Length: 67
Image (cartoon, rainbow, N blue to C red; front, side, top):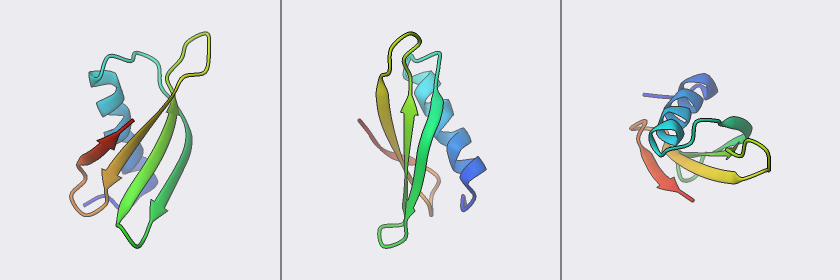
């Protein structure tokens, strides 16, 4: 299962694109060891900054949150 940032970022970016955003630039990624979840913050705005957060479970590689 995912433990590398590159793998988790690909999962999150794929989710963002499937959610209707054609542009996504990764701004920050953190692994919370206690919960076993990655929190990735993307800028999805083309001309203005629009931030979206994707939470990926590290053990399953599944998206478990999106804000």
